[in-house]
Image (cartoon, rainbow, N blue to C red):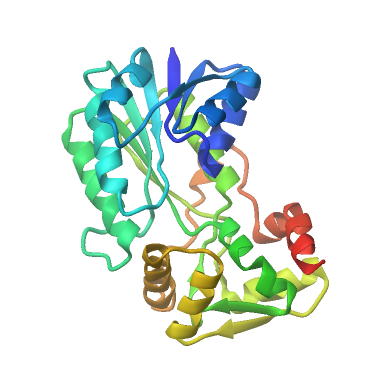
Length: 289
């Protein structure tokens, strides 16, 4: 029985590949670029080319796959790409799709990718294909976008006093590998969080305790935060979504509390925020150099 990971080159997809490979679980990874395929094959993994924008390439990539992990980058084209993958899965013989969605998914959401995820989830449920939907909260790894300002002593945001049950992408990948390889996970929507809820002030205090220098939480006006996002390489589309997510969902106290689903499903607690900072200290330190 083979599993398939779509967009295996990304952070969560790459972690799922590592986990399945370490467990000697047969799987096939789909990548968009030949160099990504070559790298995975060099590491002994089954990898194939596939392009969401060319649906005709998806059938061959999915043939013989029992369960698919569907994950794509946050882009304006996500709806068309993931729907194409879902629609190709059934004729290719796919038995179940495990989809990475979002905890704030809502068809009327002002957060662009949250609305898109909700629409894709609805499409998946209507196909008759077996499904498992994973809905993580905001990723701890998002703090790495601000490693340079943090190194200079400031954490810019627009989250006000709102809190988030930050989750580590490594735990999301661990859950994905678990539900891909175990029976009994057909049908649920699993809300994935970290072990605690933190506002930005508390997250800043924990950053300081680990990295060893002063950091100030800067609750910025929206235009200033947008400028920082653009200067750090985010597209206009991503910047607009992040501002909506933090200025509306988080600052408005609409994020969810810890669910403990990760521990329930794996018998192992998720990473805490301090664990994340310690494990990525080199990246924060490199920014400070």
